Amino acid sequence: MSDGIRMSREQLENELAALREVGWTPDKVKAGSLHIDEVSGAYQFDEANDGEQTYADLAKDAGIPL
Figure 1 (tube, rainbow, N blue to C red):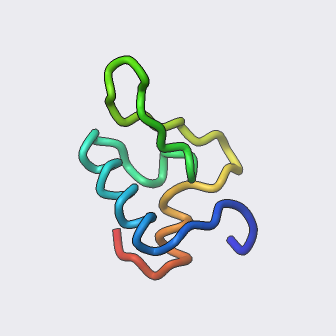
Figure 2: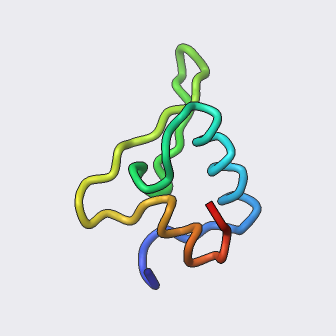
């Protein structure tokens, strides 16, 4: 995907690692949705809806194997 979320390769690798840490798969998570819960401090992600760019899309575009 040429349009949508843009981030550095290092940031993407870090977010993919955080995603794996909490047990989510890159093809189900909306790209750029990583946030930290203010109360618990836990990583949180938003589930991608149909047609939304995912972390799997970003990884593919960056040449990062999943």
